[in-house]
Image 1 (cartoon, rainbow, N blue to C red):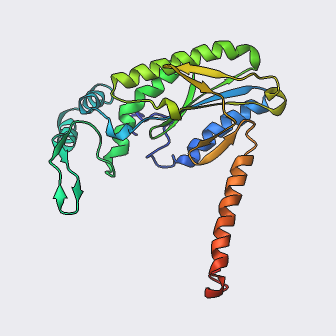
Image 2 (image 1 turned 90 degrees about the vertical axis):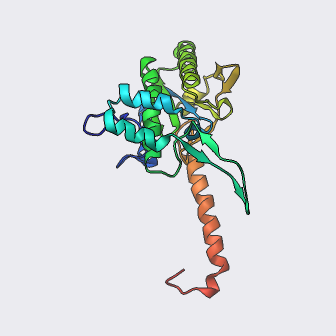
Image 3 (image 1 turned 45 degrees about the vertical axis):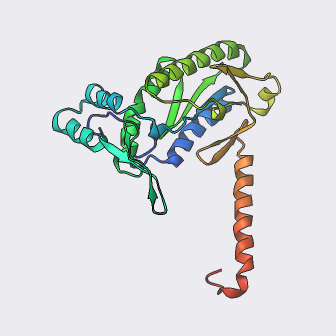
Length: 258
């Protein structure tokens, strides 16, 4: 995949030098750059329900063969790895019957993340087709668009809704499910622009997504002006918690350990 540049260029998981840090830096840089140039940004954070547990094996094999060129013994090896697996539940000495697994990639395995990224690559292609920027980390996808202020909101909302609709249709066709309740929407703008922006909403599959004040993106809090105030507050709170715990055992440890 590396030799033939088959990786999604903005998929940050499970590759050397591509972590939550690079994913957050990439999205943060684009948004902060937009605000510095008197633009706004809209970020849509997509959340999937049990993504790794719902991967259809036959669809995955077809994608490996026709999109990534994995054929012959290599494809047979992957098929033998995934097919005819079973699982059971044990509580004490009691065990359930075996259930055949026709879906999922084995969690905790070396191949699990790679196979999921291969399976989900068309999701990014849909974003590109609609002219949207995006960044992915495993099953978390962040779709965003940099725009000039208010006069473009109407057009952008239609494009975002169409992009969301196409992603939803693709997920249904590929046995995945978008979790509308955990899908987040936030508009980034400078302080003086925020005063003139009305509430922004998107409608998706009967669910109304409303603009929020702050979102948590891979462990980092982004607020509407990218001031990082919420993130600084969260870090400070966590530090005080640790310091308080150290204080409780201070009399039991050395100065060096403290």
